[in-house]
Amino acid sequence: MQSDRLAFVQDSLTIDQKTTSAIYVASFDGTQIQPLTTTPLDLGRGVLQIDEIDWSPRGDVIVFSAIDTQFIRKLYAINRDGSGLREVTKGSDYDSRPVVSPDGSQILFLRDRSCSLDYWRIRIDGTGEQQVSSEGVCDTSTGQLGHDWSPDGTAIVLVGAGPLGGFAVYQLPAGATASTYLKDRVLASRGADAGGFVNDVQPSWRP
Image 1 (cartoon, rainbow, N blue to C red):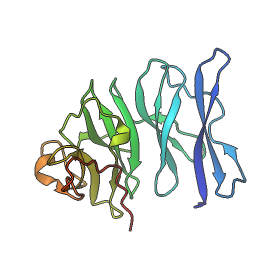
Image 2 (cartoon, one colour):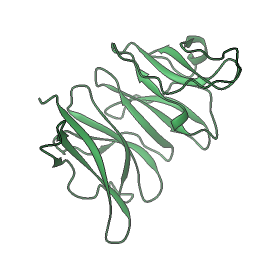
Image 3 (cartoon, rainbow, N blue to C red):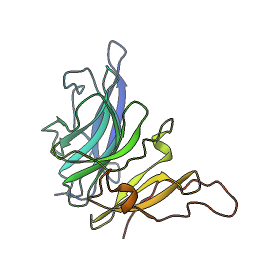
Image 4 (cartoon, rainbow, N blue to C red):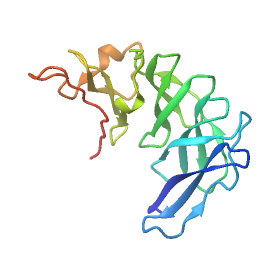
C-alpha cells in the first residue's frame, strides 16, 4: 500500500447552485491526481459539503466530517479506493474534527448538542459511541479547542477549561469517559501564568 498519498477536498457548485465536495488523492509531488469520489455525495439528506478529513494510520480509510443540505453535520468514512461510503455518526447533533486512533479502530471528535460542546469517541465502524468530556462548553468555536491521540494510542490530549480561566491542555487515558473525565485528566500545559488569562489550544502529540 502506498504511503506517500495525500487527500484533499475540492468544492464546487452544482447546476442548482448548491455547494458540493469531492475527495481527491495525489502524490506528495502533485502528480497522479485522481478523484476518489466522482459524483456528489448524498446519503439521503442532500449533497454533502466536506470540511475536515483524516486518514486512518494504515491508509485504508479516510474519515471526514460533512454538512448536508438540511444543515446536519456528521462523520463519514470511505475506503481509499472510493468504495464503501458510510455514515459513522447518527442523529441531529453537530459532529466535527475527526481524528483516527493509531490502530485505526476509533475516532476522537467534537460534538455540539445545542450549545453543549464536548469530546466523544466512536469506533470507526460506527459502534461503541461514548462521551469523553463533561464540560458542555457553549459559544466556543471548535477552532479554539483541539485533540489528539498519543502515538501508542493509550492516551489522548484535549483542550478543556483552564484551572484559572481560559483554556488548557489535558492528558487522559484513552478509555476515559464523561463520568471519569474530571478525575482522570492531568494538566499538560500552563493553564495560567503570572500575566493572567491565557489560552492553550490545538495540541498535537507525536513521538
